[in-house]
Length: 422
Image (tube, rainbow, N blue to C red; front, side):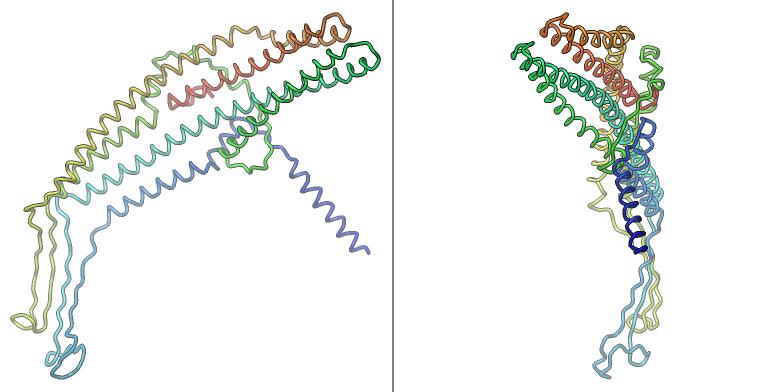
């Protein structure tokens, strides 16, 4: 009996622990989200393997060609009616060993090309990191402010529901009209419908955030925004400094320039490939040559009469022209992105700075008084609903404006390839 009780207690303890584990909420600020992102993001991890693959190409390029060993033996002697004889009297065999030597520095050119390939893979990784980090930060802010907007709806739904109950009681007592009760019911339905749409969007944002951070789908997240981290304003940094930062740090521009170096290296290699390689061999033949027990030194070299690698050389030249054009395109794209984002950031910052910090507090106080005055019947239902809707729209617009301000700061980091706005 005691053993059964102990097992029951253990089962209940494990069940309680599992229940607590399921209800745990992960509190996550932006710095913690970035740490999880760098450690767990699947796209980044996969891209990092591409760098390892590129490094393996260097190992391959450094290797010398393997020597070739050839051996031939008499299969069947019809005179002795025996197989595979090797004796001097009745057998015959021949063997050779040869080695290919690459000329015109092909090996070194291959090594340099592979080393440039590693740089390409690294810049592709850093450009992916830049893109995904912006997506992470933008999704973090979008999710945080969407959650704040959901809270606004929840507060209004709660207070409207209480108001509806009070009106329903007053209707039974004959103190209010049915049409007023219907208006409050309509308001409550609209609030719930709008909140449901916002909740659907919020769940999608949480899904994207969990994928970026490599978190389990069932993880509950509570986002925390540290406002003190955003003390620097874009208007404190000149546009020229942002443009210089982008030119120095953008991984996609470095990738385009490295691609040009790769194509230039490839052209050198393809021109070298037009020069034939030489193969030197040493052979031995028991009786098939003159004199018997023949030892020979062989030399083999192709004659570049028809094929001189013309096609690959032309492709490499075209690759250089295309890479040079891509650099110009990336530079133009960079300038336009920095300019447009900077202008947008200044506009958002100016708009937000024009809002009185006390406005939100004053408005919240006004709403509290509004509800009291309405309950005291100092204002009509229509006036109450209009002001109540204005309160909701004001709060949602403030959340949207704060998101856009934070988002453009993150975008400035993205277009400059830096971490200016932390």
